[in-house]
Image (cartoon, rainbow, N blue to C red; front, side):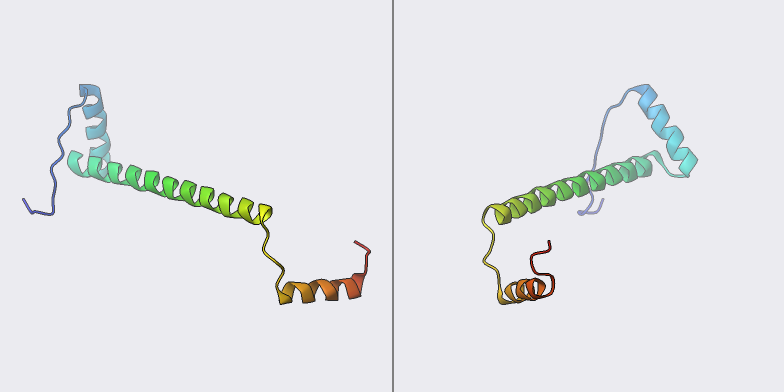
Length: 92
């Protein structure tokens, strides 16, 4: 066995083994290939979900921080506000 490979053994109820074997046969793969591929797909989905959740929480923190402590307007924003007032006045 290559040094980059790891071994994984598990016990499972008979009915689980039968179901996994049947699914593997339908796909034309071995039970080992089917279990590895299924576990890898589930791991990727779990990691992606966690990444999205972490980013969402981080984005929310940044958003609420900006609401609570807004940055000072820069020159471009000030200029845009002045041009808007010239064109539309206090209509809005």
